Every structure is written in structure tokens, then in C-alpha cells.
Image 1 (tube, helix red, strand yellow):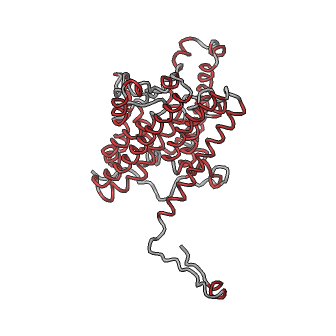
Image 2: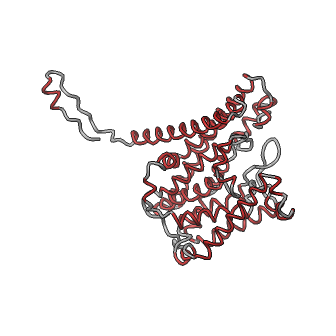
Image 3: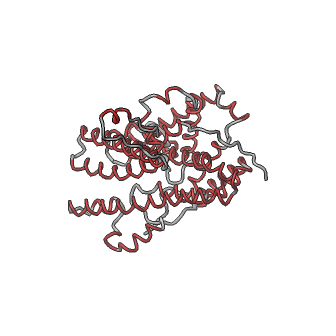
Length: 398
């Protein structure tokens, strides 16, 4: 079959880096219960949140990076590049998993608290540590807040045949993904978790958002479909839906406000079905994507502003920032508990966490640049015989 998808052009899309960086920040803030700063995140004003953004951009980036590999070098080479990335993700998850468990165990022992062990779903660490570690390696056991990365690993591992098909039949592949999404919700398909239950992020449902990101990267909204973006009617409908999502979300946050709505309407959207990616949640995210594409073009000068630089840098080094953010969210939560949720401490902890994540992103970016420096460049040293010779020395540019 011939290639029917539109291969992405060269160059980074800073919108993706910005949104992915913001998603990492939101995940960090939202993983600290009782943190008042988390009210600035999108989950409090609509159905979707940072996790939706993270999965969508992951799918978009996967197609953007590996589509050309598969087209130019074939399926096998493209698949091996993808599996290399899967291995990197898996190693990062295992390191985070071990450090996370050790930190939770240390805090529980230090403060003689079994509540934290049960709260973060690691009680098996005491009862059966070897089985728990083995199940963790199989991605079946996940402590609290360590659900996103295993989802990403599974979606990336299964992506090679999906990408192969999407390059040739993008619309048909997207339809097949939506059919799987509907079937998973209808028949309750999910992966088993340890010691009981199923995955919090149902891969059979969330794959639709991942595939949608890949479909967009390969030209899914170009051509005649792009006329929809400029339609005034679509804009009004999108805004109306955002307002409706805001009302339903606030109804779930505040019981007295929720009592103003009919019970059947309230129950249809509360609680928000995040595990199986409820259709209203999927639609809410699509509306956000639509508004971003409509009002923030790829070449928007504001993306070069220093205001967005920290978030963009975090988005460009997403894996390292995500892992650090998950760890910091636990540390921050413990600090908030010890400070009895003092408002000033909440603000300081939130700001410090984002600052550390940004510093990590900048360091990783700098480190990667050093790795790419030419190894065969010999840096001459000035002669120490005379001051004149030293002053005449000029190092070679790197």
C-alpha cells in the first residue's frame, strides 16, 4: 500500500513543548491533595486535565519522530527505534518505581505511620515484598500516582503496527481505534492489576487519545477538514461546551451548587470517569485542541517569549521532568502534611517544585548538547612561556 498520510515537516512545534511542559506541571500540582495551588490547573474547570494532554502529545510526538524512520527505512527499522524508546521509558519507570517505594518506606518508618503505606498502595511491600517487586517489573503493580508512565510504555510498545497502518490508511486506522475505544467501554475490557482490580488508566480506552494525537501529526486535520477550524459555528459550539463542562465540574466540586441541577444531569458527569476516558472527557479535550490550533499558530511570536521558556524547556525534556515531578509531588505532600496545609507553605512548595523541574530540564538539555560536541576537536592551550604568547592565543570555536 502506498503512503497516504502527510508526513510532518521539519522543526519543532513549540506549542507541543509548551503544552507538554504545562501538563507536567499540572500533574505535579494535582498529585498533592489539599494543595490550593492546584486550583490553577484545568481539571478544576472542565472534564479533562494534564493526563489527557500528556497522552495526546505523546501520540503526536511518536508519529512525528518515528513516521519518517518507518517510511525511509522500513517497518523493522522503524519498530526497533520505537522499541528503543520503550526501553528508555521502562528503565525510567523502574528507577522511579524503586526510588518511590524506598522514599515511601523511609517516610513511613521515620514517622511511624502505616497510613502512608496504605494511602499510596504499597502495603504489599511489608507483607510480600518480592512478589510486589516482581509485579512491579511486569507493570501490574503501581503505587499511587505511578499510573501514567506504564500506560505510555504499553501504548508505545504496541504502536509500530498502528503507525504502519496509519501511514497507509490514516482515517481507517483512526476509526478502528475509536471502535476499540467504544468496545472497551461497552464490554469492560481492561488489563488486570496487582493485587486486585484493573489498571487505573484503561489502555484500551486511552489508546484512542494516543492514536488521535498520531492521526493529527500525520495530517488528520489538514486539507478540507481544516475549514472546520475557521468556522464561526464550530467556535460558538466549542465555547458553549466549555461553559457547560465548567458548570458540571463546579457542580461536582460544590454540593450546594450541584443541587441546583437535575439529578440525572448531575449523575451523568459526576464523578468524572477518568479511568475509561469518558466520551464527554474526550470531547472536552478535543475542544481545547481545536481552540489552541485556531488561536495559537505554530509561528506565534509569543512562543519565543521568556515567560513561556521554563514550560517549553520542561516540555522538551518531558521524561526526566515527569519522573522528577512525580517524586517531588510525594515529597511536597509530606511537607504539606507536616505544615498542616499552611497556605504559604503550599505556595512555596508548589513554586519550589516547578523551579526544580525547570532546573532539571535545563540541566538535561545542557548535558545533551555537551554529548553532541565533536569529539575530534582538540582544544589548544596557550603557551605559558611568555605573557605575549598567552595573549595571542585564541581557542578554536566548538
